[in-house]
Each structure stands twice: as structure tokens, then as C-alpha cells.
Length: 467
Image 1 (cartoon, rainbow, N blue to C red):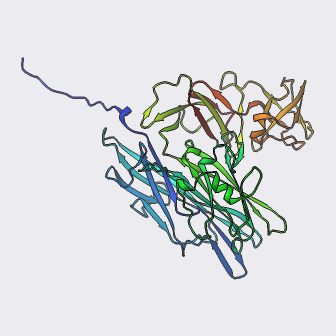
Image 2 (image 1 turned 180 degrees about the vertical axis):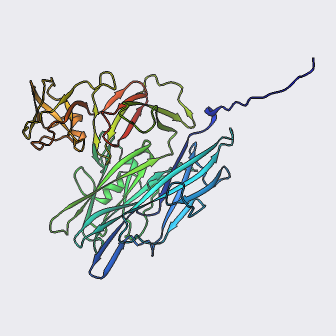
Image 3 (image 1 turned 135 degrees about the vertical axis):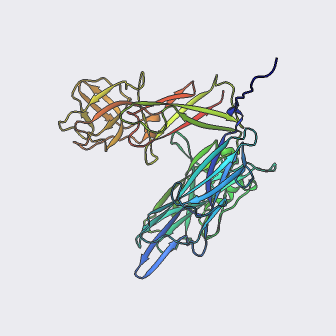
């Protein structure tokens, strides 16, 4: 029988496409300080004398492909899809901020074409530089260094190196400084890193000269580096020096995906004996496991349309794990400025468990009066939102009697969501009170987030725990 006609239909298996991760790193601090004393202007760091280099990376299956033939259409711009200011994987800034500037965001975009599926994917990432304007007496901590641990091509593991500098209006301080370094858990618990702390083999201390980028290798890790630096026990600062043990070396064993750290700088020469603090985050893309979060309703909750379902996907290399049986997921909530807060407790999202309207009558500074009786147990966490939505606070219940809810000092995990024990007497008049929860733990890889949880902007973090 003769062939009348031939047609075709192409099927693409997107499951064969590998997950793509993109970020921009810098060879120095992302924050510049500006101070002016009479006619003298000072920029720290000075990008004219020491230019800042931004480097884009596109990781596919743990390999950086940004410089390869699978990546095309590389472009840097000052706005999303703006005019090109560069067409390679690096961009160098050799000018300081103007005194009137606040920040500048750099955008990098490119096209990655999967060599197996031939699927082209647009890749976007961005990084923001900022300026801090200080007075003649301003003091703050500036961190710089490598904030990403990438996969090593050899048997020797890569590390991250972060330096902390105490900056005054006259420049970086180098006299009489001591340091404490902390690892901060997803739950917000800070663990001081010292010679005998659990996991010390994943950390090390060094001294890095002012104006020099910090570096490190796996040889810098271990308890002996803390012993030499003087951090032999908890609550002990490193030995005083010029500029002191100002660099933390972090091995990949200390980071699962990403990890928050804190540094405290104590200036023994300061008459006020002040302690200055800064936070920073390290990302590890060398691990075979990676977690991504998908949202069923995008990243916007519009017009009061109430909820979105988040799904955590765990990948081993380029493939999603075959079963989530036995896995547990700890979900944490951070507000628009990165502070950990809680979720609204919901029996059947998106309807909150207990919602109460706060009386317009004057409340005390340690309790609120409700329009109608609502029952809370001692130790419950509650979320209070002012009538105009501008103020959001959490507190732990001491007692609930009829329409009166009294607060107490928070305990357990509630203490990690920045609760208060006192409020302004009219702060939440005619506002709303919800029963809340400090974190959610699920035995499935999904979580429903509602409009009652999110106040303007939020970040959801998940820890995937393998059985």
C-alpha cells in the first residue's frame, strides 16, 4: 500500500535536563563605606585603587559551564534586560559610589543550551552593591571574601574564606581587636566556634592583612588553628592582635546548601569596650544533594487570594530522589528584613486556627484585650498585626482568661522568632491576633503558605532531613 503522507510529532523529555544554579561572586566586599571629615573624603574599600571584580557562575550538575560553548548571549546590565555593559562572564567596577548613591544592582543574563535535550534556558542572576555613609564616629564590621564553596577538581576539598574588618571613619582599624565566630542554625541558634566545639574540623582561623583578600585551603581547618588563635573554649575571644584572627575558613562539611554565620569584633582599645556584629551567608554547591522550592501560585499572593503550596524537591546530582518516604522537612519563615518569625497556626489552610480582633480600648503593655473571648494555652505563640498592617509582632502567652491575653518571656523554639513581652498600650488597637507556630515540620515535601503568614514580603527556608 503506498504511503499517502507522513507527519511527525516531537517529544522532549525535560526530566533529562539538569538543574541550573546561577550566582555572582565578588573578589571583595559588596558594601562600600563613605565618610567625609571637612574636605577629606574616604571610601572603604576604594574601588579606584583596588577594582572590584564580579564573576558570574552557571552551575549545571555541579559543574560551572559559564565559560563553555553551551552558554551564549552573556550580558551584564544595570537594569533587568537593560543596555549591555559587558559580554563576558566577569565585570570590573573601577569607580567609587557617588556621595548621593545608595546602591547599585548588576544583572547578568545568558542562555544555556542543554547538550542532551537541546533545550535553551534563559539564566538570570543579580548582585547588589551598596554604600554606607558614616559620620566621623561611626563604626561597623565589613565582611569580604569567598562566599561560595564550589566542587573541587581534585581530591582536596575547596573551602570558603571570609574576613571581618572593623571600619571607622579613618579607615580599617587594626589595633587591639579580638573576634568570635558563630554558626547560626536555621532555627536561629548561634553556636560559638572554638577548639572543642562539635564539628570544629570543618573550620579554621587565620590572620589576613588589611587590604588583602582572604584565602584558605583545607589545610587551614581543624581544632589546632583555634588553639593557636586562642579560641580554646566557649565564650573566649581569639587572642588579641593587629589585626587579629580576622578570617574564618569554612569547609564544605559545615554547610548543607547554605549556612548563616555571625562574627563579633571586640575592640579592647575602645574606651566603651564595645562589641560590633555582622552576619554573612555561605553557599555550598559542591554537595551532591540540592534542594529547590517550587510554588503552585508563583511568588505573589494577589487580591487576597489566599495561599500557595510550596514543594521541596531534593536532587542527588541532576536527578530528583525517587522517594520521600522517611524524609522530614523543617520549614522556617523570615520576614522582609531577614528576621526569623513564625507561621500562623492553621488546622486546614488557608483558614487560621484562631483569629481574634483586638479591642480598640487601651491595652496594657504586657497584655491585650480582645473584642470576644478566645482560648489560648500558656506557652502558645501569637502573632499580632496592627490595624493598618504596619506593625507585626509575636509574643508567648502566659495566660488567657476570657478576653484578656497576657504575655510572658518566650521559651523553647518560640524564643527564636524574636518575640516581645511588652507592647505599646495602643499599638494594636483594632488589630488582629492569630495563634501562631514558630516552625512547621512535615513528613511530606509540601507546605501551604497563606496570606495570613506573609506580611508584605517573606522568605521560606526548608531543611530536608534524610532518613
